[in-house]
Amino acid sequence: MSNIFNPPMESQSFFTAQQFNVNTSHPIIPSSQEYMYYNKYVSIHSEDRDLLKYPNSSEFEIELPEDYLNVASLRLVNWTFPANYNTFSAGNGNVIFAFSITNPYNPAAFGLSDHLNYCIYEALYLTQDQVYLFTIEEGFYNPLQMATELTNKFNAVVSKRIEQYFKNKGWNDELQAFVAGGGYTRFVIVYNSVSLKLWFGNTADGFTLINEVGVYTNTMLENMCSNDRNHVPDSSNWGLPSFVGLPRCNTNSVNSNSMANVGDFQTVNGVTVPRFYYGDVVPGDNGYWLLPNLDLSGSEVHWVEAVYKINLMGDAYLYMELEGQNCIDETQPYNISKFTLTTNQTNGIVNSSFAKLGVPTTPLSQWFDRDAVPYKFYYPPAERIRKLKIRIRYHNGRLANFGVFNYSFMLQFTLMSPQILRNSTSVMYPPNIR
Image (cartoon, rainbow, N blue to C red; front, side, top):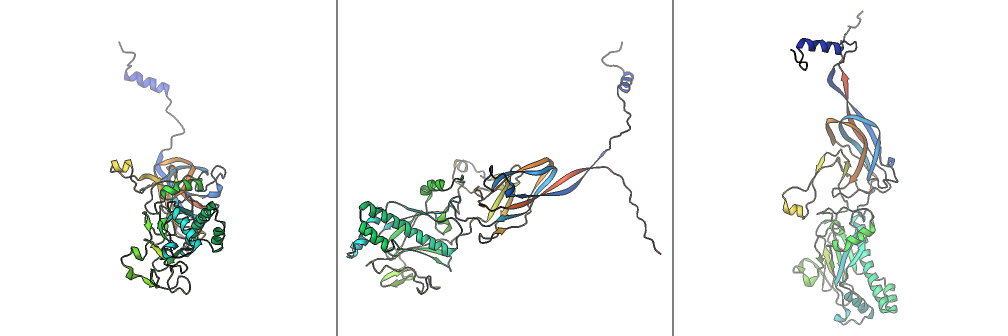
């Protein structure tokens, strides 16, 4: 007796033939497993974004004109970015400077009976534990403009404190005399165009440049800049002092009493002063840019030479991020944290950006552009790409600020199109020869 659940082979063939019709007049065309590759280009402009949703052109999302299917690779072909950026801005965290006057000139110590200058000494001496803070104007500077800006800001912030001290004391006559005399003008900051360094000087008062400004400036920067600032440690561009060539530690001014090698400097009326030998700083000064105040008997000049050359160019690279399409790994600035102290692993980021864009020009030009070669390779091909989220930033994560200027770039999509197997015969006929 046959098992009904396991019919013989003859019965299986019979049932198969009865249930399925294997005859068809539309045979399946076999795939050739070959593809045609072709390029599709899309031009993206920052002004095409939703301005209400994305007011900052450095970060926005945009929908592409069509679905790009079977994407084999994505490449940045070219770009044009505005160069009218601010090297110095609150967002960059490099517009604040701090200093203190640690050894104000005392006219009584030299027998000078000058009531106004003694009042100035009192105002400076009794407030010397208070740090002077000021901000420079946002924008782009050349070296001479930076020296002039710092000179005026140094003197202005000291004048303001002295005026406020006189007001609190009720010294109206002294206040009027101080204002009529031009206020505080003892700071002189100049640029050495040969060594490419700034020199900070004072004609009478000793001072300290407070380069450890992080404690004082965080609150000020948060109030000045509404955008979130990235706080990744930066070992080079950590604030305005780094751009003007100063180290991260505080720097005290020097004079003839605190120097061992006074023979390397010039002496004017028995006072040691610095001098530039290459030429005039101010026409006719013969390189003597810092001289003691002749109205202040016994006064000595104090100065600081910047350790490093001045840097007014800012970042040399921009990074473009395309969310989900990034292909460039990026290292991160080293920082002392629990992670770096307890592991020996890198703190870099995998697939942090899509392209690295050099900045080959200065803010004096309006635009800069270069061709690029980075690309994203997909294996297997990306099934569909329709939206892109774009972010333009610097190495430390801070967003670029292009203001109201627009920019544009073009992407190249390499698409795969499956082909049907075709057999064709090419026939070549010889030309007619008469």
